[in-house]
Picture (tube, rainbow, N blue to C red):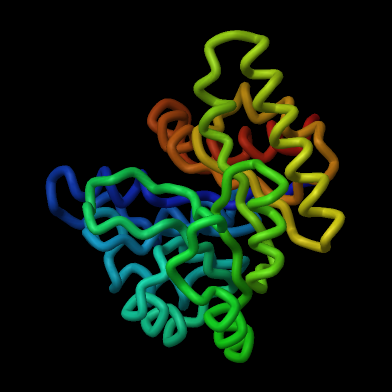
Length: 239
């Protein structure tokens, strides 16, 4: 059965709307774990708009499962994460424009020595993952760069408007997941996933974990955070 990691980005973004202390990502993390979540994922962004550095330190002390920090490969961020020591760091593409959406790492046009970075992190007990497009070449690039895991971008699948396009994207994800599994990488899927579209993905045996945030927060507004997490656990388990 695949694991579920709850992304707290939306919780932080909601807090930013009124610039007060609520909703608190730390409280959300505790509720998610109480509901059975296997991990907590938080973004470290240039803007610091959603999740603040203080949140990261607090979450490190609170999270009892696995804390993953998603971030661009900026030296300042790497140093900070090394100090915090999460379970895993997932690298995303860096953009000078802080308002740019999160993008995948392009291993055909690398601007960083990821092999050196992942080796250094491994020495401190932190494992590394890369956010990539569901393509075999990108999976191979992640493996060569010292990754322990890959997070496959499911946004194109989630945004497909026809059955044919959705199936095409599902096949891409399946092929990339199989390729990653063959080279010993943990396979994670994220971006755009909800209670319905995650079900076909849950049938792919090579997928080890799902990262979901926005859909859970939307559902939580109606039924509460713990129930929303439990319902997503049921969805990703394929039951």
